[in-house]
Length: 204
Image 1 (tube, helix red, strand yellow):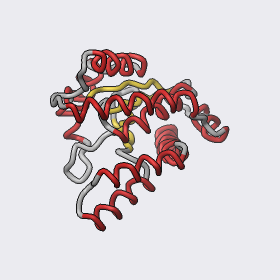
Image 2 (cartoon, helix red, strand yellow):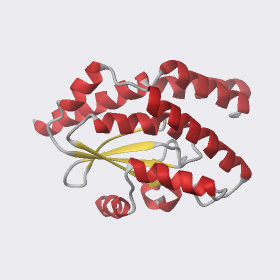
Image 3 (cartoon, one colour):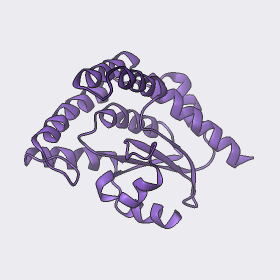
């Protein structure tokens, strides 16, 4: 696993680079990833708007900032994502803001389809679900991971899939509405919780 992590980091991007790559591909009428379609490009355009909005409106609660600032050891947050992913559009800007507030955390992002070996290490019930946050210590060991979505959003999807049998366009709309009402708080709290726990275990 360590070798795969190291190799993936060589292909990783800063948040700014990640956003720029998505924007440039959209300017060329393309989406990120191995598969190209009008549908994925459309989703990518919607997601760029969502990310732009989040960057202007999202705020960290003081207790989140305080907890992240108190982290003792240094970590890399390696995020697996794609520009067309609706969950990623709602979550990656929040992860970026959290990393910016934490002196000991360096955020790096990789595209799922360019890092299949890495993705296969962090499947969700056998699926390549993204985004996935992997917490790595200074020895390139994985100490925690999170994703692809906060618990409340995951429960919504499970409940709706049980009711309708598949993820319909209406379910996708309901999920985006959940994110809008949640304002990123669940994502912040869950990630902060795993970080505080991981850091406490390593410092002892």
